[in-house]
Image 1: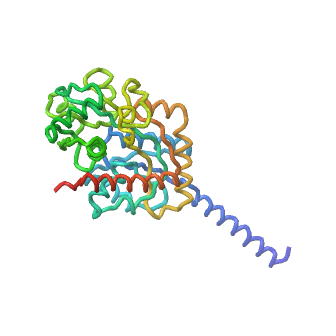
Image 2 (image 1 turned 60 degrees about the vertical axis):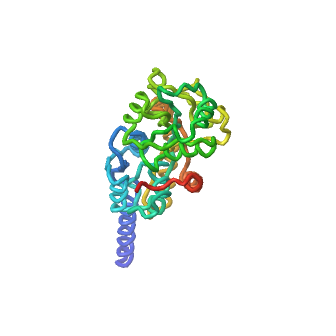
Image 3 (image 1 turned 120 degrees about the horizontal axis):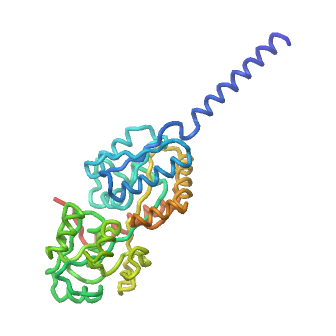
Amino acid sequence: MERRDVLRFGMACSALGLAGKAGAQDAFPNKMIKVVVAYPPGGVTDLAARMIAEILTKEYGKPAIVENKGGGTGTVAQQYILQQPADGHVLLSGGLGGQVLPVILNPNLPVNPQTSFVPVAQLAEFVNVLVVGKDIKAQSVAELIEYAKSRPGKLNYATNGVGTSAHFTSELLNLQAGTQFVHIPYRSSSEIISGLRNGDVHIAFANAPTVNSLVQGGTLRALAVTSAQRSKALPNVPTMVESGLTEFVVTSWLGAYAPVGTPPDIVKKLGDVIVKGAQQPEIVQRLETAGFQLAVKDSAAYADFNRDELARWKDVARRANIQPES
């Protein structure tokens, strides 16, 4: 072999070696994936994050972990993620309450979740349950509406804060039923339950995972669920549609988000993995046990859904004159 051929052969081998290293570096994932939650452990967003992390761990054979960073109504977690490389290794667990509703009441948030994050995949949804306090004798939604209309402005509804999904859902009831329930914001779900049991508040749209066991055990009385179909956990409780409010369908939903700038192919890849993994029987069973329903959407469908939900709840806020907390 002549000298120039030896040089060419050496250069070719070197190039192949570099290409191999580049390929290894570009492989995804090439480090631990984190799913960040903007709330303390134990809530619905945290539960969804742990399901997502488990799916990713099984798919990639590398540990994906959940990291809880509460505070600042979600801003602390979001700012943390935006400080990390936008390469798909740090995701946000969120949904209606964190990614859509805050923007409606406060367009000047320190981090705008609508413009700072892109939807990766929807995992699941859960319904709200219309539960009533001890002083409400109505046995149906129709009876409740009739009772409320006979006492305009005299009955109240409890939520876990201004701008939450329960707040928007309750005002949707006022709009569609012509009632005048008055808002009483609480700090936590446990306080709402106590208020209902003590008769301090009259009704609440509570997250199903929080109250299903209390309804099943008779501690709380449910008049309806807000989903299009009855809940598997509460099969004897009718929907709001069945109860006469034919346009009243509301679910809270949860999924994964990535920071803007994450390569689209990685967003799609992660979305496809989550959608596929969520449909495994063991994951479906665990979701249902926790009070969720499987409701998967890939990255493109989830992005469209987020836009539709933003428009829908903006309209509710406008018509109900929902204002931010002063």
